[in-house]
Image (cartoon, rainbow, N blue to C red; front, side, top):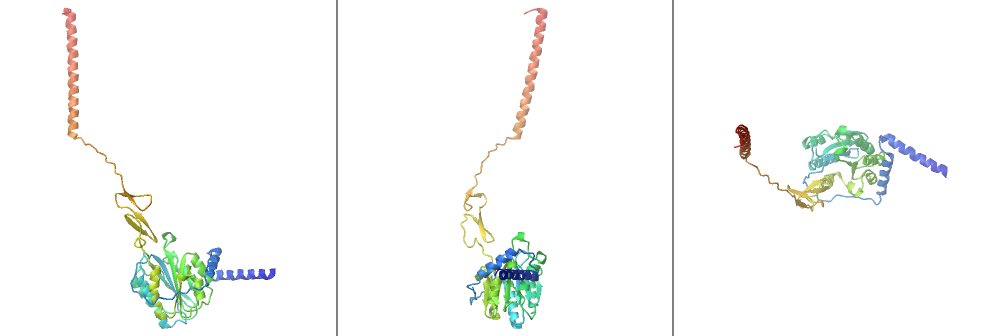
Length: 342
């Protein structure tokens, strides 16, 4: 029994080592990857499945800034006409997003048995150029190496060299995977590594897509990150669903308790007072600033100069009078000495 248990542990170790070697995951914490995989498997049953609501609107919204990478399956099972539907979906998504250097940046990773990065996050920073680049994407035909595609997105598309913003800017990193088949390689560990690096993963299954694989790839909660459509013909309706998910919500517009001014900040808000007021300790209400009035009496500089001149003249006159009195007193004493007392 001990020998059997030891052999089992050794086999698991070899399997994990093989996965790490195949997908280049040596830079990631094995404990973190294992924890991600365990958490994912706990959520597989009961299987959440979200289908599309029949309604879809064309209204665009101002999305929160994202580094967004689409990972699209173009294997042989995706017919040319169906692949065109995927490209329409990508173009519709671009129309929905607020694209720009300081807003949302988009990249596309195309895969089958090989992986091709169609364009990077830094390549197209406006909608017309981006949509033109999408029209030029061609299917790759054979194979479904989904794990390899996720690894390529993580190590090549989501890097600062490729146009991703640094962590200090706190820009969300999002991957949307679209596939209609079953992966021909391992997706669990590489997806766990991607999620562990901070990438939020949405998995979209079409027609014959393997739902178990989608759930192993997607972020939690799975009911918010796993979608399914029956055909590529309706995939463009996912645009409205992703608009609800990716669009930034203005917390102040949703209601607030600020007495004066509400300031939105990502998913939260804070209060601010109008000029002349200060924010109270409750961080909601405002109090008028206490202003101390200081009365300054300004003297006429002319009056000051006149007074000073008068004082100086008076002092000089008094000194002259004093000197004359002293001189007269001295002369009287001299006369008395000569004539004697009068």
